[in-house]
Image (cartoon, rainbow, N blue to C red):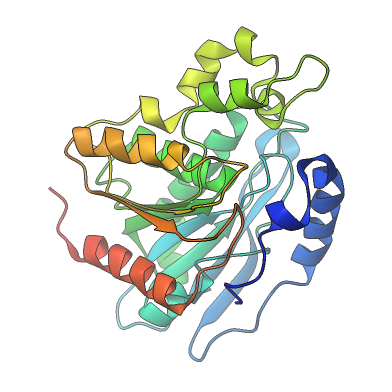
Length: 289
C-alpha cells in the first residue's frame, strides 16, 4: 500500500461522489490479493440473509497453533456504496497472527439505519457461533473500519461493550451524527447522513443521537485506537477528538493518532500497521475482567 498517495477526498470533490462510488465498486471486484504464506482465505462466506438479501464476509485466517483472534473490518463509503473486497486496511494483520473478517452490510440506498448496525452485529454473532469452524477464536473479537465503517465499528463497540468486543480500531469515523448531519444539511439536497437516517436531520434528531457512538460511551466500553488525518475536511478531526474525550472521561483506554498532512482517505503504512497489530495483540492477550 502506498501511504503517500493523495486522499480520495482531494482527488474527487464531494460533488463527484456518485461517480467515485461506481469507480470504487468496480475496483473492489479486482482488489483481492493472493494469500500470504500459510494463510487461508475463505471468500463470500454467507452470514445472513435479511429480507432475502444475502450478506457475505471474506475471512483471512493466518496459520497459528491455536485458533486465531479475529478483527472484523467494516468498509467505508458514506453508508451508500462500497465493497468488502476494497481497501481492507487491516489486511496485513494476518502477518501478526490475527485473522480478518471483512463483511458486507446493507446500504442506505435500500435500507435505513439501524439495518447497517444490525448487519454488523449479526456478523459478530455469526463469528461467535461458527468461528471455530474456520480456525477462529470466538472469544477474541475486535472491530475496525474506516469512515462510515469506522462509525459502525465505534457504534457497535460502544453498544456491545467489553468483553464481548475486546478492542476497536477506527479510522476517521463520524461519531456525532447530529453535528455531522447539521454540517451537511441543505434544503435542496439530501445529505448522506439524512439518506442513512431516512429524513431531514432536524426531523431525525432522536435517531441521529441513537446512531452516535459518543452517546453510548460507558465504563464498560472496549479500548479504542483511532487514526484521523490532520487535513480531513470531509469528517472533521473533532469527530475523533470528542469520542476520545468521552472515553477518557469514562476511564476507558483511548488513543488518537493524528496523521499529519492526510485527508479523509489513506492507507496504513508499515509503522501504522505495526501499531494497530500491537494494540489488538495487547487486548487479545488479556484475560477479560
